[in-house]
Image 1 (cartoon, helix red, strand yellow):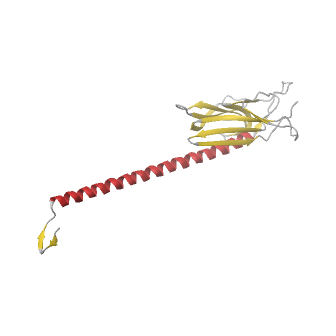
Image 2 (cartoon, helix red, strand yellow; image 1 turned 180 degrees about the vertical axis):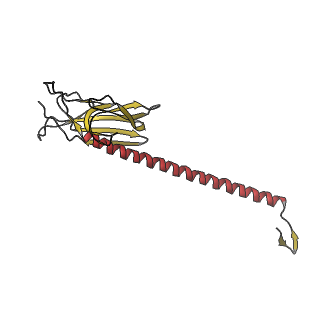
Image 3 (tube, one colour; image 1 turned 45 degrees about the vertical axis):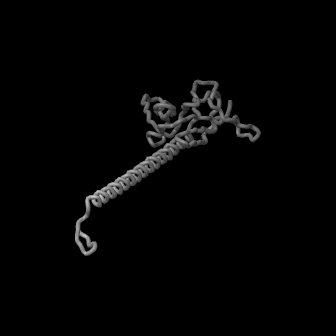
Length: 203
């Protein structure tokens, strides 16, 4: 390639060629960095979207199973003690909704918080059909900074009777009115409260 200057023809100088190559190289590096940053941003966005969708699905399953919890008692238990266990890192109860089966069916459901790496926790669900040894376990959530349960205790529906949130369930003759799940992940804090439809009056 040639250009006209003062009526004489001459080619590009070596300095001009080097400057052009340097400018093109800088532009290529800048464009590559911008494209890489865009891909990372898209990837992070997709990961966040997938995680939020997983949370939504888990909450829907939790809501269905906890609302279907049953205050079962043993036939030979004259005291009428209810089958329910609850603490800050676990809860266990009978339900007529199976998460894993996706259908109605009497199961024992146990939610457990377990370590998931350094300073992280995971939430697991363990199910087995009542009277059958077929325990199945699935990890629902992972990478949590905190997962804990609370239980709402109220002795009757009377307006003058006040309820209270407790961290551990010790009343064997009552069934919780609500179960609350606290979640902390990243900089986010969530509280998920599910009412328990079936109740048992104190005897």
